[in-house]
Structures are given as C-alpha cells and as structure tokens.
Image 1 (tube, one colour):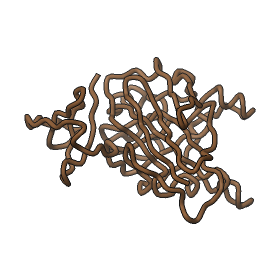
Image 2: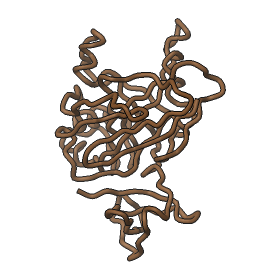
Image 3: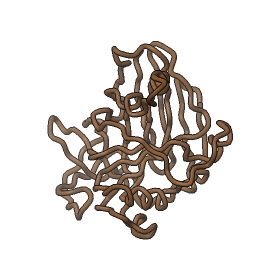
Length: 257
C-alpha cells in the first residue's frame, strides 16, 4: 500500500510518499512517473494540503443499498450524480466556516473518494479500473435545506459548493481494495457513521466506466462515491468531524457555526 500526499513546505508546494512520521519528497507529476528527490520532511513540520487539485468533483447520490432501503427509494439503473465546485475544496485540518448567506442545517457525509490517475474516456470496466490512481477520504458537507428551497429547481450544486464544503485527504492510497473497508464518521467524539463499502450500488470500476461514457475524466479528478446510513446535522458552535477509512487514514476538520 502506497500513500501519496501533498503539502506546504514553508510556502513551497510539494508532494511525496507518506512513510510513518516522514514524507519522502518526489518531483514531477504524481500521476505519471514521479521521481524521488532524496529529500525527507517530518509530517509535523509541514502543512498537509488536499492531496490533489481536481479539474472536477463528481458527487454520487443514492449509491448504497442500505440507505436506499431506509429512504424507500428505488435502486438506480445508472449513477445519479451532481458536481461540486472545485473552489469548495478544504485541506485536512482546515477550519470550515458556515457561509454568511446560509443559517440553517449543515450535514456531514463521510464518503470514499476515487482519484483518477490517467485520462479516461468511454472506458470498459477493465480500462476504468486501470485509470483509478487511488482512494481518499471525503466529507461531502451539504447545506441540506437549500436543496428543496425552490419548488421548481433542486439546488444540489449550490447546497454542496460553498467555500470549504469539500474537504478530502489526507492522502491518496493506492493498491487498496475498498470493498473490504468501512467508512467511519465521528462528530465531536461520537461515532455517527460506520458502513461497509461493499454495499455500494455502483462499485469503483463500474462507476468510473459509466461516468467516462458521459465525460472525459482527467488525472486528479475526484469522484465522491456517496454516503450511507448515519448522515446528520452539525449543531454545536464548534465541531470536529472526522472521516476514517482503514488503509487511507483520517480526515479531520473543524466546522464553525
């Protein structure tokens, strides 16, 4: 298992391999034959960034059997998705502030994120699997009450695209089988979500293949795989939300009302 990370090193953006408490620094392109520099940095001495810069963020809805059953909605025949603005990205450990234009409920949604590693268009499932670079943790923050505020138009993109509403990281983990893993979300020290990724309606290769038939996927693009049972509102004045996936790590952020 290999874990790639991106970080701020005294004002210089770098990337490398996470090796315990150190980062082995690489140069070039993370997704295409990066080369080791021989430099090492202590994790404690740098600021971790979101591990890549996606050209687009695709977010799934209704992608878990258990949640579909609870909501009493049909299992979809094809992926149902929306886009989050890339400006919503927040780094690991960043403080996310409630937007000034919105004062109602904000929901946490712990999710698996797929990171694309090579250009992918109209791909078979086998080609799609080869185009997946790795996996990361996502907290798909959502201004829930906005979605149905206008009876004529569901405002999914607006509800999910406020500044800071797209934390992901802290690493991209490769050589990982997500079907064997669980997503755990903890709000202020209390576990709120713990669900198996094997319950996905559209698992990674099938999902990437389907999306690639709609649009070209580029290296660094992020696909948020949707969430399952346990989604809830963030209510306290200051909140710590942590999303953990074994083999990837823990993404933690503070949300301030």
